[in-house]
Image (cartoon, rainbow over all chains, first blue to last red; front, top):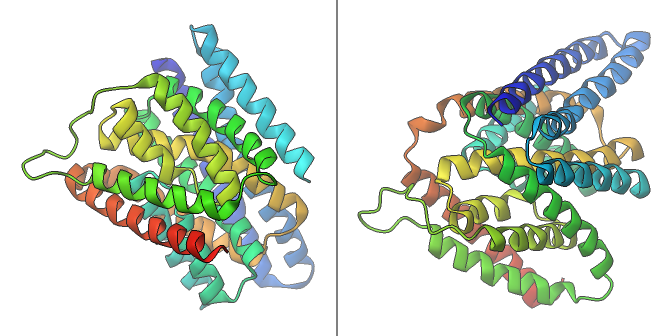
Length: 90
Length: 249
């Protein structure tokens, strides 16, 4: 579980920096107006998507490295319900 | 000027969220509505995405320190998500005002129990009741989906008072747990287009900065001080719930 925690920390740090960078650049492009603003709009979506991916990737990493099967089962149930719920709601 | 206001708001909410193990939505939603005239639905969507940012920024530091009880978090997440689905199914049957009143009373009891007693160090673990924690997480999911409250207000006291984690560890684990539930909820708002991108960007960047700083400095605050702050937050949310429950809103 300690290895999983290290991997989780790295994954979250990567998604944090990648997402924050994209959102920041998107904000700068938005100030440019016109076509740049349109690019910034979509870049902000991608940046937010990267941040949202963080908790899911972390859970997958914990599930993959867990020695106890119950942890893996819990993680799979959680991801399945969370994704299905989000898709059904949209 | 507005991006700077949103950045500062996000930084405050992110820092507050990580210190107490809540998402910060209790600050963000009303502030976004009153300060920026954002429609309530867009404010909730923006807030949910910022809660994810709080969770990612806070947990990236707390996981590296080993402060998150990952095994417990994964179990609670599963029960909370199941509870949230159950809450959606129960919503047409159970009268919301009754649930609001009952939840308000429960929060007042939690505030009384979490308030540090005279001479108590503030972070002393309680007698653990792991099985009760799963029931509590499911109940937290039901309440979150039916009453629209964040999970942190349930998970931090649950992890501290029922599971027996010390307050720092309870708050760190709670911040991680609420990230996934907020991510699935935020995704819905993002796909539906119920999010104003010009507001999300600066607020989220502020949250990332505030949450990262707070996660590094959380141990500078005594557990007793954090528990008092959390107790005040519980009483605030409890009063809001009781008033809504009594008015039947």
